[in-house]
Image (cartoon, rainbow over all chains, first blue to last red):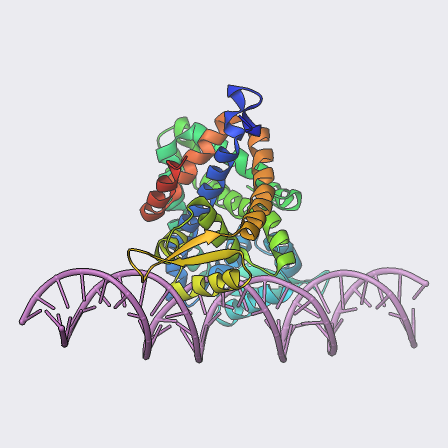
Length: 166
Length: 166
DNA sequence: CTTGGAAAGTCAACAAGGCTGCCCTAAAAT
DNA sequence: ATTTTAGGGCAGCCTTGTTGACTTTCCAAG
């Protein structure tokens, strides 16, 4: 047995290359499901995933600046900018100039924006709820734990930031 | 309390909207980490994620046809075709005409293709191993369970197909 | 056998959303 | 006051998703 994962005995079976590959494939297939429902809704409105991500985090932390959103999403300015522009033009997002620092733009969802956010979020939460319910609370705890460990430190920081919001 | 998730008592706390949102965010941030290492390697070679996905599944099931790969990846023909063409041109993938059905093309990794596959896979498995190890076997079981429930039925079928390969 | 439809694969052309690089404005520092 | 720095916008490129038209091959019905 040249298998490096089994060297420690049965307790490390979950670290065999085969098990790790299975995890990789699970992530791949699950992520498709994860985005499938919102994608369908977005298509009706002529938007894409990028719009969804922006809407999600603006809703999560109203008033955040473009730069903050940028670092949360981990994309470049222009990538985000294009998306933000259409959302503002369409009246889903409002951009207010900062009062203390007039360079900054603070972002808020309008009424219409909140409506779309709820539609998207509801679809995605329904799928998540189904999976959680089927798997049970203990599985959910493990799920969250592994995902958190999988993040880059920068992303984990952002993730934990949001954690302590009411 | 108008919170729909808590109606069943403490055992259902993991189904509150807030908990579901946290799961959604965890998926988002974790997926970035999940793809980060391969992305860096791919960039050096001038490839993208699409190439990685093709390489992964050709390695997993050598000899599979274009159509099969198509349905596993869940993309359209042209999307895959462009990627396959460059991989074939670059000598990483070999396409053999089917002997029984001469319309079909069977795909195999060349030596060079296997080398890149190992490089990509190793990077991704290292990250996964770190997360698994930090979270522990029970968490991993939960992780896998929730992901499996999150898949669309079609994707789950593909996922379980691969399962029973040696 | 031959013909007509279905299936596998290729290719052309378009759209979304990543990226870099350049530019303007506002604020801060010298 | 003038230079430096930070936030944000715009132009243009590339990957990778899409649809639709076209070839080749297979198979089945006349």
